[in-house]
Image 1 (cartoon, rainbow, N blue to C red):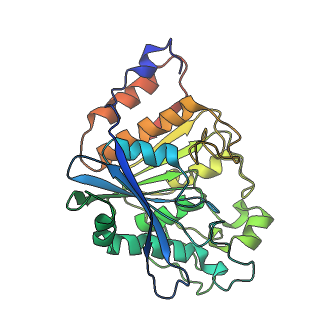
Image 2: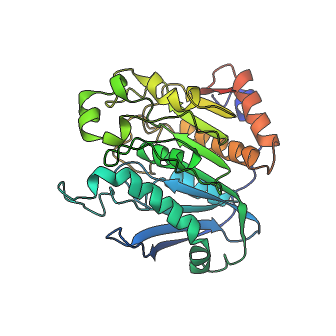
Amino acid sequence: MTASDPAATDVAVTAPAPIVSVKPVVLEVPGRGEGLQVRVSAPTAGSGLPVIVFSHGFGSSLNGYGPLADYWAAHGFAVIQPTHLDSRTVGLSQDDPRRPRLWRFRVQDMKHILDHLDLLEAAVPGLGGRLDRSRIAAAGHSFGGQTAGNLLGLRVLDPVSENAEDLSDSRIKAGLLLATAGRGGADLTPFAAENLPWLRGPDFAHMTTPTLVVVGDKDDSPLSVRGPEWLADPYHLSPGRKSLLTLFGAEHSLGGIAGYEVRETTDENPERVALVQRVTLAYLRHALGIDDADWTAVRKALSESVAPLGRIDSK
């Protein structure tokens, strides 16, 4: 998309609203070993705010993903970001006994947040009574995509119990999976199979919640032998209403969604990030039953653009 391409810029986006962000709000979680630190961001005005619970990528924290969290909050969502145990800010030792079940602690973090929305709401000045608990989405990037996926119906073969438990949550009505791992087994590199046991046997067959999957067509993950197409598995292998945004030229950071100044971003592209912002916002408004106009418009704009930054497919 370029400024000279009218179809690329005709998507109406309301002006951003002022937001308030509070961190860290600490929730006590028995058996976790660390308090759960959470960041809550929301517009300063408005009621009936839908909620996004966002799971960060491996090693990040509640301080990451400002380009998404700030944008969503400025356009009418309450955004809740936990710091998971794998965060560099927590500093678990390599021999910490919790490591084999890091994936499971992440899911528990997300559910604990949903269980304690009253406390989080009360921690933010002026937020009380303004959340719409019937419209909650789970979102995540990379490892966080798998975490969000568990709430949507994705099942993970637990390396400790060797069971693939249903951890879906009926409170979640829509999902966003950004650069999320695909099939396990022979699709994994030896490193991933040995060191990331939660990737060995994902099962997408029960992931029925409406979801947008976002991938970069240059995201050649070191975790899979299949190349960028591996990241589209959550779309292709799951049933029900799903959409797929493929970003042309994008790598794992999808242009820089992980932060405003993040060293891991190797494909920095503000226009690409702006597209992710617009498409994810439009999708969530559509999937949560708020408004379909923006979703229709952004799909039309991409399909009619002479130089699109991406493509949307739906099933």
